[in-house]
Image 1 (cartoon, rainbow, N blue to C red):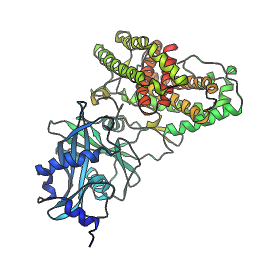
Image 2 (cartoon, rainbow, N blue to C red):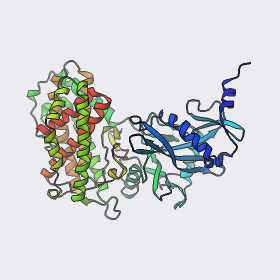
Image 3 (spheres, one colour):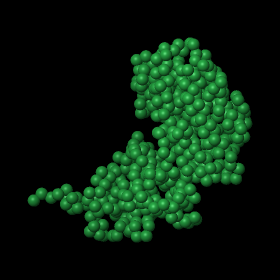
Image 4 (cartoon, one colour):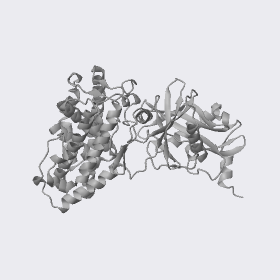
Length: 539
């Protein structure tokens, strides 16, 4: 008689004669689980960020119970070590289930615990775990001194658990929607400190009452063996929306370039504007308004206003040192230059090794990048803090159109984790607010060129001049509103020449950063950051 798959699995499953509540204390289980099981499992997960490196081994850095009365799950902090001599930490909650039909695609390990056969799975796949996490935040004590610290905001209304579901495909985290009204984001890649997204969300909601970000509702932090506070989950109110500003702007640019094509506009008939010149709608030529539409220009002004309000809120603190504004100094200059020169050398090597993947205009721009490497490096070195009079504040750090939601003709800013390549320390360094503005401008540049490449592949060159004109006017309209708003709020972002210097500096930094991603992931798109770099160094 042939055995069924489950009978075969039961015979081959690892067996342990300890209760689930003591399993993590069993050294034999830990040894097998880390070396034979997790190494294979973790590399298949979307949230695993080490796919470009070679995994050496995994250690269990920390574990803790996530429980409610007799219901027990484990949270694991995994230290993933790589052959290239660095490591990353990941959060993995685990559960033990005995239902044969459950989580067939998400099983980590078949196992027998005290003759109970089942599977260890990622606990987020289990509704009972998701319900427990929600209820622990909902019933959190005002002051929690335990190892696993749950926190509830005053904005989180007392309500019963009704439902939970995954938000959708995510790369680096796992977000759960509860009762169709709030979102709990489990951070997968973690750091030995409070997550910036948690810090910024809580500060903006509770201290500044900034309305254009998802309100902070609660969180889960742990205190590790070194007494560091580590954020593993953040709960925020769900913002019903029409999607993110990236998709919204792509549709806008598709409409704008179709109008350019349909109207048979001659780009020479549209007056140019000086780059970084502050503009109001009254400064815009009627022919350009007729082309792009008045509503588009007003949307850019609205986004500029929300960005200014975010920076004003982040620059309004004078008690909490983590958020109090700071002036430029020598330490910041050294930190900035060391960071950027290292990154720039990395990008130079990447360009040299990937030239064979480029052709046409992209190849010309890449060769220009290499030819002018000394000039670009000099621009990074020429940061002189003594000439800067503005303030540095905590900033978003990874500000682009994909981090902004669109709702009812308004914009809501989210995801304050910071730049993915940066260390947790670097993400919390106070920066010029214009670094965020430059990130958004680079995102506009991307969306404009993405539209051209997607819609007008055969004759894209004739649209490049229109693209640069549209970009310059978009930047001008944004700056006209943004600078007025931050000035009115007494946030010091420097005098005019200082602002232009910082914008150019941050734009160049961002475009160089983007270049590495594009050459490694989608070389045909490298033309976009290369064009951005060319615009800056040739202006």
